[in-house]
Length: 486
Image (cartoon, rainbow, N blue to C red; front, side):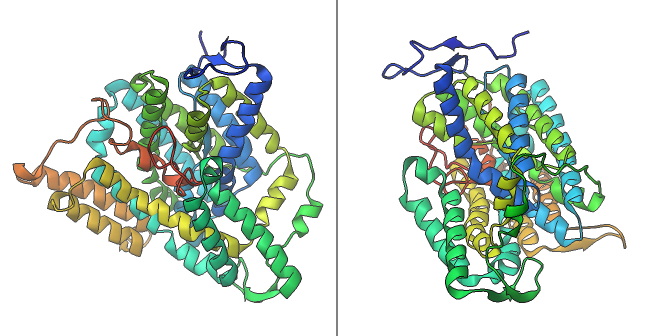
């Protein structure tokens, strides 16, 4: 069986000829391939450790399981779809809601495990019926609205949890990150969020030296005198060790909050596969269902041991576009590097020490960008909001999601926020479409009718967890023309 783990040497193995590309089944020399793998790790790194930090999960485990998920993905797609599966930022809002309801890390991973199972099943359906089934169930007006309400539902997390811990640091980090996203170019633009975190980390250390402790709310919300940057856990952490594994816990209320994110993940995978197919010249519509299912399997495995879910990363599309090297061997190298990072608890302690004020400045931009990607989906798909068939369900669902409106059905069962808003958008759109007069119903292009990933709504939606002005790192994916992503 061909598992896509055999590669032909491209040329002399050193430098591609002018205008040539290194195809997925080719490779450069192994030292150069390892270097490209390290570059892919750097590209995904910012988003992959921001996600678990914001979800309250172990960043070491997140990085390790991203490597495992990438290996599963490459095997499942037989090496035809070069891609890195990193930690998804789409679930940050879900984790915040679940924890606000008293849920633990196990509750979060249990809810996301169920989402991963559903994602796997959706992939099987797409394999059976083709990509058009995605558009039929989730047209751009629905996908855009769901992505928007997921992002904007996060606003209270920044306003009530992170920003109050150190408002001036948060403001400076916000300004620095905004400048980095807009003004930097190339590789640096793709790691803008990471640079913002490094800046905030250093700024907090300097402020502690110069001004001493700060009197403000700490991570628990209690107002005390405390250091902005507490490195006590770093000194006691081991250099080598296993991450914090734990099993999931399943609660219906948490599962219902998390399920809507399936829409964002499906759209993301669709956009990524389309983009990679266009870049490599190898149409990959026949691999879309497999890619979605593989993402689901990787996320199931990650959440089963206490890690966050994973999704395809457009950060790494930017790396491929810049290098014109699409070799899946480089992704295998990246996955191996990620496994090694996960075995360093001291690294995890450094990440866990990121001050709340720094996260406040980052999330002001990050959460807003997640939400505005929904608007980008509408623009790219030409969604007409003057049409009441589009306007009414989107408007109602977004307000319910952003305002965290609650519907209580019994004393023990209710729907609110993201879950209720998504339900209103999806059921509202399809119900109104069935009842609307013919002139309001316009048939839009389907994913497998030759439209680009951007026009299908797949690109930006998929960027949900990570678009920070370019791959959760900033900038625009060079070869795709799509806003890159977590």
